[in-house]
Image (cartoon, rainbow, N blue to C red; front, side, top):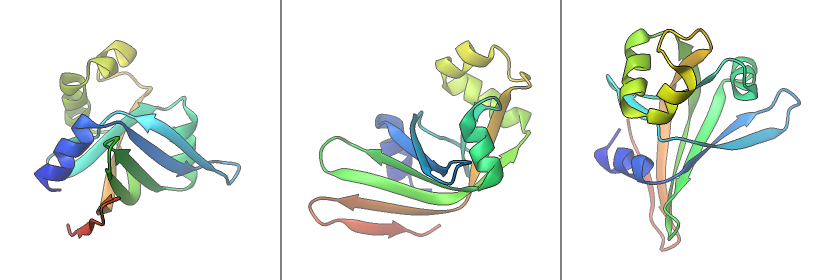
Length: 133
């Protein structure tokens, strides 16, 4: 993952798309992912629909837009893992995660990583760059 991509994700709101249990697409805003030990991670609650959606169909796509002309799309397979180090890193980076889950050991707190991500940077001015991993 390039520093340009990581900086872009940290500065802009992203939206994560999943396939709903009804078969329809579901898109929701999501905080910037965490890059940890060579993988891009995100988190959610096991009580939310997104958790069930990914359990049923693991293909996801994250898109973030700078509000001007550039956007990033990251397509991957979401893989949940019970990794306390990642959860602790999420707590360190995101106050909102601390406020919601109170402790990294919270059984409702789930983390997943983007397996084999395909990253594409695009713009209205013609940039269309695939970032190879």
